[in-house]
Image (cartoon, rainbow, N blue to C red; front, side):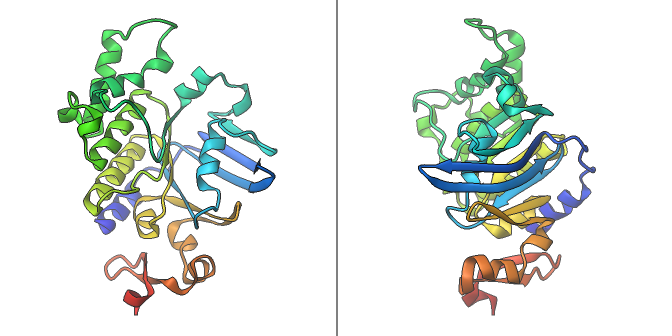
Length: 277
C-alpha cells in the first residue's frame, strides 16, 4: 500500500505556485510559554504537506493558528493570498475546512445532517439549504466513501466511519484548503490507509492538504512534503526522504526507532529499533 501511495504521489501534477496557505515567522505564546518560534510553511493546491515531530512540538497549535483560533505573537499568515486577520469567519470557512483530532457533534446527528453543516458558510443568515446544497452534500458523502452511512447516527459509527463522516462535512464546504489534525489517530491499520488514500485523492483533485500525522512511515507514504517541528521550530522541511533520515530521527526520537530503506521502493521506513536490525 505504501508503495502504491508513493507512486501515486509522484504521478501528481506539479502544484500551483500561489500558496493556499503561507506562514512566515509565526510565533505563538500560550501561558507565558513559547509554543511556535519563527515557523514558516506553505501549502499549495494539489499537494499533501505533513506536519510531523515529537509530542509537544507545536503541530496542532500551528493548525489552530492557521485558522485564527490562537493569536500570533509575531509573524504573519496568509490564506488564499490574503492576510488571515483581514478575513471574516465566513470567508475563512469558505477558504479553509478543518477536521479536528477529536471532532465533536451530537451522537444522534445523522451522517447526512453532519455533511450539510459544511454548507453553512455558504448560506445567508437564517437561510435553508437549497437543492444545490443538498446535492453538494450528497456528492461529499460519496467522495468520502460514506454515502451508504448517510442515514446512520454518528453514535453508531466505528472510528474510521466517523472520521470519514467529518471529512465529508469538510468536503461539503468546498474549500480549496483542508487541514487535518491526526486523521489516523486511534484507527486500525486498514482504516488509516483508507483515510489517507482519500486525502491523496483530494490532492489529485487540486485540494491543498495540511495534516498532522504521528506515524512517520505513513507520512512518508502519503505526503508530498514534510515539515518536521521540534520544540516549536522547523527542524527540517522538504521531500519525505530528505526529512526522515537516520540523523534527524535519531536526534528527535532517540534510539527507540530506526530508519531502513523499503525493500521495493527504497523509501525510508521508520521501525522500532528491535525490528530494524
